[in-house]
Image (tube, rainbow, N blue to C red):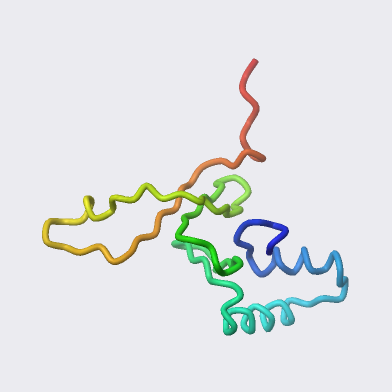
Length: 113
């Protein structure tokens, strides 16, 4: 996860792990994810309508970008803030989630000449 630098699906973790341990299986990946969640070393990343992804714990408040082409998810280490201003009068904002969608730099088509 550290080498990827972005939230990963269990299948992506499996593929990365199999580079070092070819016999690694998906069941082992899920058991390890469960243990790392319990110890607080990783955290769950949930996007609406998407399977769960996992990232290293300890990030400051941040958001995510999902590429509509390759479907990878990337960290966005910024926050526009000011969410209280979007809430109806008299409401209190306790937290928020923000996901950006578009095309990552790997998938972006080169500009026309």
